[in-house]
Length: 153
View 1 (spheres, rainbow, N blue to C red):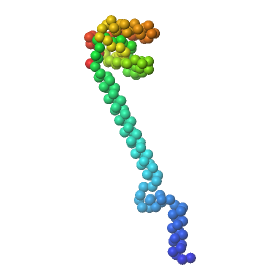
View 2: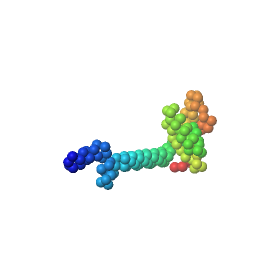
View 3: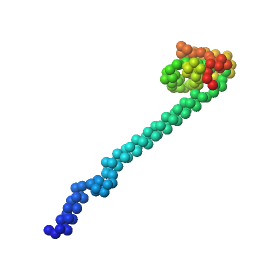
View 4: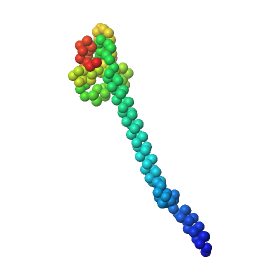
């Protein structure tokens, strides 16, 4: 056989039996495994960035919600919690029942959940009595008068 045929057969065999990774590694280029690992790392970094942005947006939303000023004179308070996780759980239950929940933080560190604000004490008691008639009877439902100044502004 001629040397050109032998070289052609060997080159064809090397192309058929070895992949592009073989030649890429010879040329100092990244192989398919390295490219895949870089793609996975890039996707993980993008996911971490998305999670970080989502956490920052949630914290900003919570801060804005906590900074919302108190406008009414009287509130029907449904619960008062020292542990924020308990307040969040009860807030979720109230929202599931369809109540518009107003959160206040008292100066002593308690988170207070109110569901109704009014300008008059009579109106606040009327709403509280309506809740009692419907069977809403948490053990610590009460009326808070904002002029007492117990809440943070």
